Image (cartoon, rainbow, N blue to C red):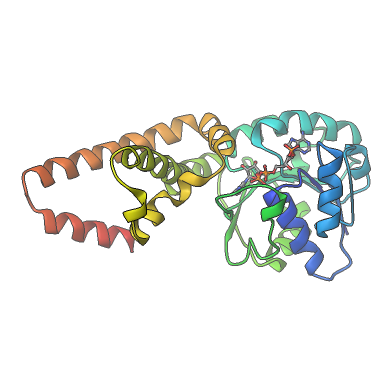
Length: 270
Ligand code: NAP
């Protein structure tokens, strides 16, 4: 089986490393934007071979698009010109509704299935790639209405083999869930860091402080891409959070049912 990966950063590189570690007869080919990035991915062992030419993926069975979200439309355009009939195309983007819309322009939209490995690190880039990144984590697939999933059986098998747990959701539900579970979290972490930094000395902060600001260290460009692509659901999540925080403020200010407040919070976190 031949798997092509477009975009050889944290996720594309980790996927290549994980697939190669399976030791099955899987050939991994990579395409990057820059020649030095293609060479680096090859040297790291993430791909058998890599180039900057999407035509090198023409005979792949599966092509995985692992570029930043805003690059996906142009990557799809390039792939549309080269992939043969029957090739499965998937992606790993953190927001799914726009990708599903762009995929309608592919020559065989029924051969495309949106995907999102819910795995990652604060830092992006090939240097951070890790064969074990997906182990134990959900990998959400977002079929269109009534889409037949049989063409993707081999890809599901590989996703399970690298340790991930495939799940199926609509693109709308995925984006709403991720707005709360992931996108709100990095937004709050960043806002928290900005609030605290000018007023307190981070050197005095312990594990609680470090845990809270961890996500604020993430890739600002990736965060921007995500917030633009998932604006509506994220704004809804921020509004909900703002309401809860306002209620906390009022109850703390009036020393009113404060223990109950934190008990409720602990219960919600379980
Ligand atoms: P990354 O480390 O920055 O990797 C993206 C790679 O794509 C870079 O090597 C970049 O090369 C390359 N690239 C950009 N445009 C390209 C193009 N037109 N053709 C070929 N390669 C191109 O980013 P990442 O964290 O792996 O994220 C990639 C995707 O995974 C995003 O869609 C993101 O939403 C999704 N995702 C990320 C995480 C996470 O935690 N980071 C988790 C789950 C899903 P250059 O260096 O030349 O720009």
